[in-house]
Length: 305
Image 1 (cartoon, one colour):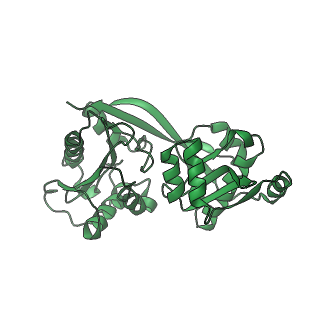
Image 2: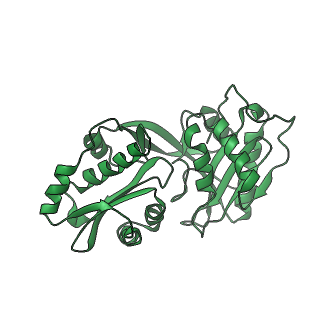
Image 3: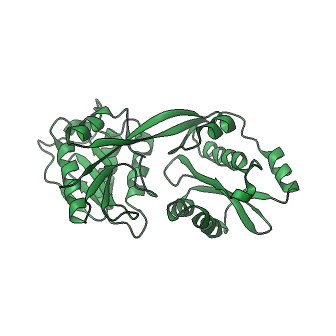
């Protein structure tokens, strides 16, 4: 979520942003315009801004969502599938050439109005799993946080990412051989993806299963035809996660192996670093690949009148 200024203005700047349009689908010229606004405004996410907009515009089939657009701004909002009384503002971006004119405030209010019409009694500026842009408001996008607080939003949680450098040794051949000696096979998921997703749904939740199905890359481990662990990347563009190991296989080192295999894929795809998103176990990632806590997100919420 960003309203951070940026010097260049790639889009023509009319005198006003125009009325807010509510779109239930985002495609064609509207999608291209939304992507350009995001690229210009999201100064800490420029490289993946277009992919983020496209991902948010293709959420799970049961999600109610909308894009709210003006001539120079974009908001994307969605209803939670976990709690029908909660709505989310997933993205808010105003082109630098349109900033300072109240468009961010207008778009946020319009998003609240749309969510209220869908039955939301509370709105959150926080990620709406499984299809989200960020866990919350990146603290570096200070104007967005200031806008939220000026409109009565209260900070209720903090989330963070870790960064892993990919110019490091990610070799796991010795570990793969050791695991084979225990009867555990480690491999990239191909035709197994649906079976791995069912394993994830059984042991964790539907959100992680959706991310597993929609990930750019997926590795898993199994023994005697039974899936034991998984790790995915690219369900949220360019980020690692989710990953998990069944209780019966913990302590075997599977998590470290699968993590490194995914990071090696991300390096091969041209990334120099990987964001490990919405992290829980700091110590595991720090020890496994030298990852560091680096990106902090404030999560906001407020009741809708």
